[in-house]
Image (cartoon, rainbow, N blue to C red):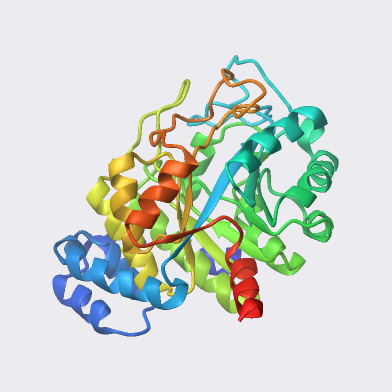
Length: 374
C-alpha cells in the first residue's frame, strides 16, 4: 500500500529539498530521458522557472509523440450537491446552508440529452459525499441509466471499497477520479474537520483499492493552493510513480484544480501563478510521457488557449458545476466558479485552429476504432 512509502517521507524535509534545488540539478533533469521523483523535485523548484521555455518545448514534443495532435473532450455531470462532509474550501460543504438537490432519473436523462446535443461521448459523473443519498446503489443505477448514451463514463464521488468499485466497473464504469486535496497529513484534518472525508489514510489508500479492483483508469490530483503546491505536487508524483509500478495495467491521469472562488470558501494559502502552473504541467509531462493531463474550465480562456500545447491531453468545455446545470435547474448553487465560459463548439474550433483534433470519446476507444478502420 502507498501508505507504507508515504510514511517514510516528512513534509518539511521534502519542502526544504525542493527549495534547495539548483539550476545545475534542473539542467541535469532536463538532459535525462527517464526522470525519477528527485528530478521532478528539480523541475517544480523555483530554480526551474528560468527554464520554462525549454521545458515547454520538451513537454510539447513528448506529448505529440505519445498522443499525437488529439485532445480529449469531457464534461462533468453533477448528479447531487448533497454532502455529509465539512470541507472549508467547498461550496457543497455540509455546514453551507444551501438548497440541496439530487437528480431523479428523468432529470438525469434531460441533462444527458443536453450534453449529447453538444457531441459529448465522455461524461464525468460528480456528486457530493453523502452515502445515504448518493451511495453505491444510486451510482450503480445512474451508470446503468446512462451507459447506452456514452462511450466513456468516469466518476468523481466519495471513496468506496474495492468490491464496490468492481461492481461499478462491471456496469460499465471506465475511470475514477479521486483527489487527495492535500498530502499534508496534519493540516488535512483542519481542512476536513467533519465527515468520512476527515479520515486521511482512508482517502490516501483509495487508489490502491481502485488498482486492486482493476478499474481501467485512475485520476489523481490535489487542490492547488490549499497547501504549498510544490510539496503537494511532489507527493502526487510519488503516488503516481508507486501506482504505475504496482498496478501497471491501469492508466493514469492528473488534473490541476486551482482553488477558485465559491460560496463560503477560504482563500489560497499559497498562490499558484499562471507561469508556475505551466511549469508544473510541463514537469509532469517530463516525468511521465504516458500520463493524461487534464485542465478544466476553472482556468480562464487565455490560459487554456496557451496551455494546450504544453502537455495537456484532456480538456472540459461548457461545464456546469451544479446539479441540473445544463437543462433542469440552471440557477442552483455551483461548487466553484467557472472561468472559461465558451461553448464546446467554440473550444473545438479553437483546438482546430491550433492544429488539434477534438476527440469526443475516450482515447483508447478512439485509437482502437482508428486502428480497425485502417
